[in-house]
Length: 111
Length: 113
Image (cartoon, rainbow over all chains, first blue to last red):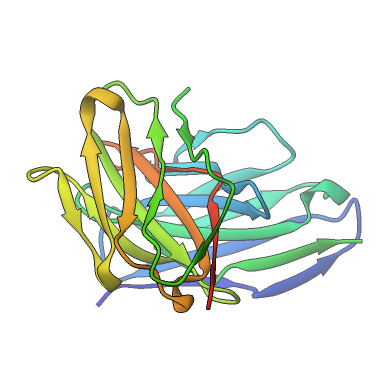
């Protein structure tokens, strides 16, 4: 069966520090991968999605970037965090015929 | 850009009342449609999904949704809500390949016992 791993679950980082959140999927090949940010009253904001290795579509211009170095690995990064980057980040995977399956999420607090 | 709109931000109902939550989208081509639920303190859970076929989709826990292509809508319904349905509900839409899955802002449902 397919599983998705996202870590860390919580993270507290100082302003200006770098960020790296990792997400890996097991049990499937060539999945679509997504990074979302969930904020109260705003639903899930699509940040990035990827349909293949090295293919990244960015939806919102911001302080974040994403990379897909391997088929089942999706990384969310920042060179210098801002206070406004605080939030709940969700990784998800799906295929052309399934819904999205979500990781456990990362609560990021920038201080 | 594609977008998903959920017009009801907070809905308050009494138990046994009927529920309808609106969802509209702006995709022009083939779409896949989803409703997710998030109970307090829990993660997102799929309620139902539509890919093709019968536009009236039945999901878990007595929920159903109807895809009306001409209205770009996929409204969620339940004939009789329960206190345990208190949660936040999210509509999601993708293109036909699930390449670009976008969510609405969510509707918070409060059911009074």
